[in-house]
Length: 216
Image (cartoon, rainbow, N blue to C red):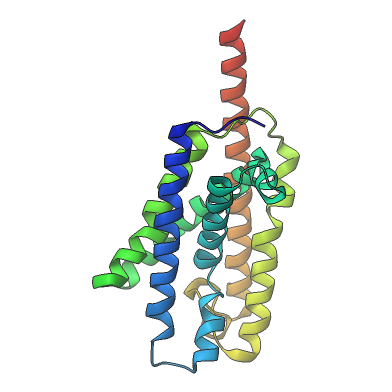
Protein backbone atom coordinates (compact mmCIF):
# COMPACT_ATOMS: atom_id res chain seq x y z
CA UNK A 1 0.00 0.00 0.00
CA UNK A 2 1.40 3.36 -1.05
CA UNK A 3 2.37 5.75 1.76
CA UNK A 4 0.30 8.91 1.89
CA UNK A 5 2.09 12.15 1.13
CA UNK A 6 1.60 15.33 3.14
CA UNK A 7 -0.22 16.79 0.14
CA UNK A 8 -2.71 13.91 0.11
CA UNK A 9 -3.28 14.23 3.87
CA UNK A 10 -4.06 17.93 3.47
CA UNK A 11 -6.36 17.16 0.54
CA UNK A 12 -8.18 14.51 2.57
CA UNK A 13 -8.48 16.78 5.62
CA UNK A 14 -10.03 19.46 3.44
CA UNK A 15 -12.59 16.97 2.13
CA UNK A 16 -13.31 15.73 5.67
CA UNK A 17 -13.95 19.21 7.06
CA UNK A 18 -15.99 20.49 4.12
CA UNK A 19 -17.88 17.23 3.68
CA UNK A 20 -19.09 16.87 7.27
CA UNK A 21 -19.80 20.59 7.58
CA UNK A 22 -22.00 20.48 4.48
CA UNK A 23 -23.82 17.30 5.52
CA UNK A 24 -24.47 18.41 9.10
CA UNK A 25 -25.50 21.87 7.94
CA UNK A 26 -27.87 20.45 5.32
CA UNK A 27 -29.33 18.00 7.85
CA UNK A 28 -30.08 20.82 10.30
CA UNK A 29 -31.67 22.98 7.60
CA UNK A 30 -33.72 20.06 6.33
CA UNK A 31 -34.91 18.64 9.66
CA UNK A 32 -36.15 22.07 10.81
CA UNK A 33 -38.46 22.46 7.80
CA UNK A 34 -42.15 22.62 8.66
CA UNK A 35 -43.41 20.54 5.75
CA UNK A 36 -43.65 17.06 7.29
CA UNK A 37 -43.05 15.14 10.50
CA UNK A 38 -39.51 14.85 11.82
CA UNK A 39 -39.53 11.12 11.05
CA UNK A 40 -40.58 11.76 7.46
CA UNK A 41 -38.01 14.56 7.07
CA UNK A 42 -35.30 12.23 8.38
CA UNK A 43 -36.21 9.59 5.79
CA UNK A 44 -36.42 12.19 3.02
CA UNK A 45 -32.98 13.54 3.90
CA UNK A 46 -31.42 10.17 3.16
CA UNK A 47 -33.54 9.77 0.03
CA UNK A 48 -31.36 12.17 -1.95
CA UNK A 49 -28.63 10.69 -4.12
CA UNK A 50 -26.63 13.85 -3.44
CA UNK A 51 -26.73 13.31 0.32
CA UNK A 52 -25.90 9.60 0.16
CA UNK A 53 -23.03 10.16 -2.26
CA UNK A 54 -21.56 13.04 -0.26
CA UNK A 55 -21.89 10.86 2.85
CA UNK A 56 -19.86 8.10 1.15
CA UNK A 57 -17.26 10.69 0.11
CA UNK A 58 -17.04 12.04 3.68
CA UNK A 59 -16.70 8.54 5.14
CA UNK A 60 -14.06 7.58 2.57
CA UNK A 61 -12.05 10.75 3.20
CA UNK A 62 -12.31 10.37 6.97
CA UNK A 63 -11.20 6.74 6.97
CA UNK A 64 -8.29 7.42 4.62
CA UNK A 65 -7.20 10.42 6.69
CA UNK A 66 -7.47 8.79 10.12
CA UNK A 67 -6.72 5.11 9.52
CA UNK A 68 -5.80 4.21 5.93
CA UNK A 69 -4.36 0.84 6.98
CA UNK A 70 -7.57 -0.44 8.56
CA UNK A 71 -9.82 -2.90 6.74
CA UNK A 72 -12.10 -0.05 5.69
CA UNK A 73 -9.04 1.98 4.72
CA UNK A 74 -7.83 -0.82 2.45
CA UNK A 75 -11.26 -0.96 0.83
CA UNK A 76 -11.28 2.78 0.15
CA UNK A 77 -7.66 2.64 -1.04
CA UNK A 78 -8.70 0.45 -3.97
CA UNK A 79 -8.60 2.22 -7.31
CA UNK A 80 -11.99 0.79 -8.24
CA UNK A 81 -13.63 2.09 -5.05
CA UNK A 82 -12.33 5.63 -5.32
CA UNK A 83 -13.02 5.74 -9.05
CA UNK A 84 -16.63 4.65 -8.48
CA UNK A 85 -17.07 7.34 -5.80
CA UNK A 86 -15.60 9.92 -8.15
CA UNK A 87 -18.04 8.92 -10.89
CA UNK A 88 -21.00 9.17 -8.51
CA UNK A 89 -20.07 12.60 -7.17
CA UNK A 90 -19.21 13.92 -10.64
CA UNK A 91 -22.63 12.83 -11.91
CA UNK A 92 -24.17 14.61 -8.90
CA UNK A 93 -22.37 17.80 -9.92
CA UNK A 94 -23.27 17.51 -13.60
CA UNK A 95 -26.97 16.77 -13.06
CA UNK A 96 -27.41 19.52 -10.49
CA UNK A 97 -25.52 22.21 -12.36
CA UNK A 98 -27.13 21.49 -15.74
CA UNK A 99 -30.71 20.71 -14.65
CA UNK A 100 -31.58 21.40 -11.02
CA UNK A 101 -29.64 24.58 -10.27
CA UNK A 102 -32.09 26.70 -12.25
CA UNK A 103 -35.30 25.56 -10.57
CA UNK A 104 -34.64 27.08 -7.14
CA UNK A 105 -32.71 29.94 -5.52
CA UNK A 106 -31.22 29.00 -2.12
CA UNK A 107 -30.17 31.81 0.19
CA UNK A 108 -27.87 32.22 3.19
CA UNK A 109 -26.55 29.03 4.80
CA UNK A 110 -28.62 26.94 2.40
CA UNK A 111 -26.68 28.48 -0.47
CA UNK A 112 -23.36 27.69 1.24
CA UNK A 113 -24.09 23.99 1.84
CA UNK A 114 -25.73 23.73 -1.57
CA UNK A 115 -22.56 24.89 -3.31
CA UNK A 116 -20.43 22.58 -1.17
CA UNK A 117 -22.52 19.48 -1.87
CA UNK A 118 -23.11 20.08 -5.57
CA UNK A 119 -20.04 21.94 -6.81
CA UNK A 120 -17.06 22.33 -4.49
CA UNK A 121 -16.88 18.77 -3.13
CA UNK A 122 -17.48 17.17 -6.57
CA UNK A 123 -14.68 19.29 -8.06
CA UNK A 124 -12.32 18.61 -5.14
CA UNK A 125 -12.88 14.85 -5.22
CA UNK A 126 -12.42 14.82 -9.00
CA UNK A 127 -9.11 16.64 -8.54
CA UNK A 128 -8.18 14.15 -5.82
CA UNK A 129 -8.82 11.31 -8.26
CA UNK A 130 -6.93 13.00 -11.10
CA UNK A 131 -3.88 13.95 -9.05
CA UNK A 132 -3.53 11.26 -6.39
CA UNK A 133 -5.39 8.05 -7.23
CA UNK A 134 -3.50 5.49 -9.32
CA UNK A 135 -5.45 4.19 -12.31
CA UNK A 136 -3.39 1.30 -13.69
CA UNK A 137 -5.74 -1.49 -12.58
CA UNK A 138 -9.00 -0.06 -13.91
CA UNK A 139 -10.85 -2.36 -16.31
CA UNK A 140 -13.95 -1.88 -18.46
CA UNK A 141 -15.62 -4.77 -16.64
CA UNK A 142 -15.55 -2.64 -13.47
CA UNK A 143 -18.31 -0.38 -14.80
CA UNK A 144 -21.08 -2.94 -14.32
CA UNK A 145 -20.61 -3.39 -10.53
CA UNK A 146 -20.40 0.41 -10.30
CA UNK A 147 -23.95 0.66 -11.68
CA UNK A 148 -25.40 -1.33 -8.76
CA UNK A 149 -25.52 1.65 -6.40
CA UNK A 150 -27.53 3.99 -8.66
CA UNK A 151 -29.73 1.06 -9.75
CA UNK A 152 -30.57 -0.01 -6.17
CA UNK A 153 -31.10 3.64 -5.25
CA UNK A 154 -33.60 4.10 -8.08
CA UNK A 155 -35.50 0.93 -7.17
CA UNK A 156 -35.85 2.01 -3.52
CA UNK A 157 -36.91 5.55 -4.46
CA UNK A 158 -39.59 4.29 -6.85
CA UNK A 159 -40.92 1.73 -4.36
CA UNK A 160 -41.12 4.27 -1.53
CA UNK A 161 -42.47 6.97 -3.81
CA UNK A 162 -45.29 4.69 -4.93
CA UNK A 163 -46.80 4.63 -1.44
CA UNK A 164 -45.46 7.85 0.12
CA UNK A 165 -45.89 10.18 -2.85
CA UNK A 166 -42.42 11.66 -2.27
CA UNK A 167 -39.80 11.61 -5.02
CA UNK A 168 -36.54 13.47 -4.30
CA UNK A 169 -36.04 14.70 -7.86
CA UNK A 170 -38.55 16.11 -10.36
CA UNK A 171 -37.26 14.04 -13.29
CA UNK A 172 -38.18 10.77 -11.55
CA UNK A 173 -41.48 11.97 -10.03
CA UNK A 174 -43.82 9.25 -11.27
CA UNK A 175 -46.89 10.98 -9.80
CA UNK A 176 -46.37 14.11 -11.91
CA UNK A 177 -44.65 12.66 -14.98
CA UNK A 178 -46.30 9.27 -15.13
CA UNK A 179 -44.50 5.98 -14.69
CA UNK A 180 -43.47 5.65 -18.34
CA UNK A 181 -41.69 9.03 -18.41
CA UNK A 182 -40.16 8.60 -14.94
CA UNK A 183 -38.80 5.16 -15.79
CA UNK A 184 -37.56 6.45 -19.14
CA UNK A 185 -35.65 9.22 -17.37
CA UNK A 186 -34.20 6.69 -14.93
CA UNK A 187 -33.08 4.61 -17.90
CA UNK A 188 -31.41 7.61 -19.49
CA UNK A 189 -29.61 8.31 -16.22
CA UNK A 190 -28.38 4.72 -16.18
CA UNK A 191 -26.99 5.16 -19.67
CA UNK A 192 -25.36 8.41 -18.54
CA UNK A 193 -23.76 6.66 -15.56
CA UNK A 194 -22.49 3.95 -17.91
CA UNK A 195 -21.05 6.49 -20.35
CA UNK A 196 -19.28 8.45 -17.60
CA UNK A 197 -17.91 5.21 -16.12
CA UNK A 198 -16.52 4.10 -19.48
CA UNK A 199 -14.97 7.53 -19.95
CA UNK A 200 -13.22 7.31 -16.58
CA UNK A 201 -11.82 3.86 -17.34
CA UNK A 202 -10.67 4.98 -20.78
CA UNK A 203 -8.98 8.03 -19.28
CA UNK A 204 -7.35 5.89 -16.60
CA UNK A 205 -5.99 3.50 -19.19
CA UNK A 206 -4.71 6.37 -21.30
CA UNK A 207 -2.89 7.98 -18.37
CA UNK A 208 -1.42 4.67 -17.20
CA UNK A 209 -0.22 3.81 -20.71
CA UNK A 210 1.31 7.26 -21.11
CA UNK A 211 3.19 6.97 -17.79
CA UNK A 212 4.42 3.53 -18.75
CA UNK A 213 5.68 4.72 -22.14
CA UNK A 214 7.51 7.61 -20.47
CA UNK A 215 9.40 5.18 -18.26
CA UNK A 216 10.60 3.12 -21.22
